[in-house]
Image (cartoon, rainbow, N blue to C red; front, top):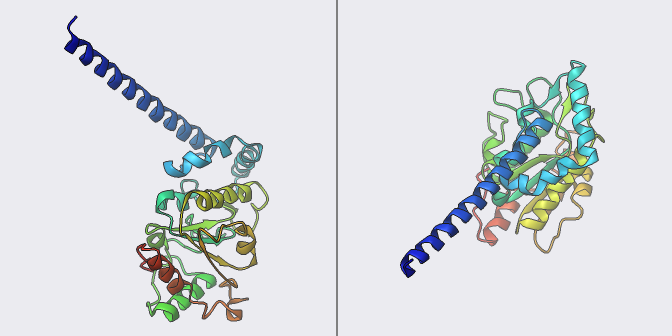
Length: 261
């Protein structure tokens, strides 16, 4: 057999091996997506996040959470947001694109409100008081007119991770899914950002968010804190805190594109 033919065969073997390995990787990723989908019905997670979170679905607390949600649905309860939107914050903001993190606590529990993004409501839904105050501060801070729509997907698509601590809630029962396993799962999400991203702005409104993200490395990231935008506290330091201009100033200082709020 000629030398040139041997070289050609070796190269072909390398190509076949590389393609086989890629097929295995792709298949493995598909299996993970299928497993996660069956665990949480029609929910899905964007691949760059799933890479860091897939092992979480094997933990006892997440298996318990799965069983809890199954029982809630079996009892005929209405759960918000809809199943496909459980992980909407991750799906609209891939890990590599994260520039800003805003932390909320629970999804809205009124009909049609929750859309998987903290503080955000679906198109056409009346803006809740906290969101109204966020928009008031945005107008004061950057002279941006108060938006008609309360859907913050436009922020998420620019790299603003709008993450609730608890990702589901029963209709008309605020905080009903707290301490069921979501908190530890979202703690992991914050750790993933903290450890795998650089120069992220963490906007922490209220003591709950500040405690939840207290481990963020301030030598790598920038933390902005104030009271919560709720009407109960907004006049004690939220108004006038200028989080939007401060965020953009930080991003510009790191040669990153600012957010079009």
